[in-house]
Image (cartoon, rainbow, N blue to C red):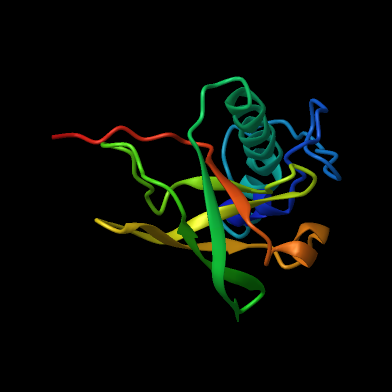
Length: 162
């Protein structure tokens, strides 16, 4: 079954209409799902559609005004098949801006040459700044230089509610 983590393997700079290295095979939506393998049939039908919709949302987010902050990786650890990064934002966070566990962020090298997508695991906004734990795929070449300063870019900007 598709997980939201799949998209973390994608190259953010890819510009195609389909996600990189994904070639969806579409299937007709059945009138009903068989009881003995409903999940398998459901996945076969809807996974390609969900992948394309997710990719389309990512492409659309590139055209939106998105907050960008300078940050550094302060720690890293393996969790199952993922890499968890502890990041600290090095500048002031605007009032009302925050991250949630549903957000996907883009970490980009300060020089802009490499980037990775990460899912927010947790974040804490304190008077001293923002710290967050981000989960990313360890199978990307961008991880080679993650000890350098990074730009953190939220793909789903948030506005605080008072």
